[in-house]
Image 1 (cartoon, rainbow, N blue to C red):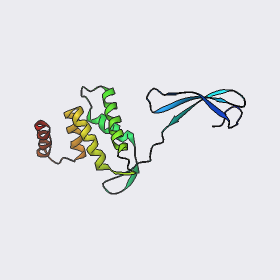
Image 2: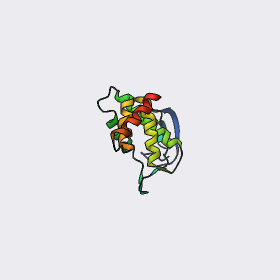
Image 3: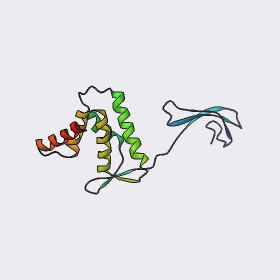
Length: 150
């Protein structure tokens, strides 16, 4: 690690501790040449994830698309924002734990529906109606019956 003050490479770690969300580590370092101290942060580099769409086009993974879909599904429902964010985090963790470089968009849709089913039935049906492209009321009713039976 280069010292930001003198540019030399000899530094030592004085203190390490996780950052609040445990997703990175804060390290306090000291230069062995000029003895000045500075802070660095280390974060795990995520594997670049590519989404394969229905038409077989590919695009980079974008968390905001999942957030947008989940928030729209939960609109005007009695669900705290913290809970919605937890669900989005859980969806993202599930996706990345598959350890794939490419993932079909329909697999992501199924993961989202699975998590929404546990969160709120109305949010689940709202998401499913868009995701599964319900064409008529009978399709809607079939999905509602599945929820009521489980």
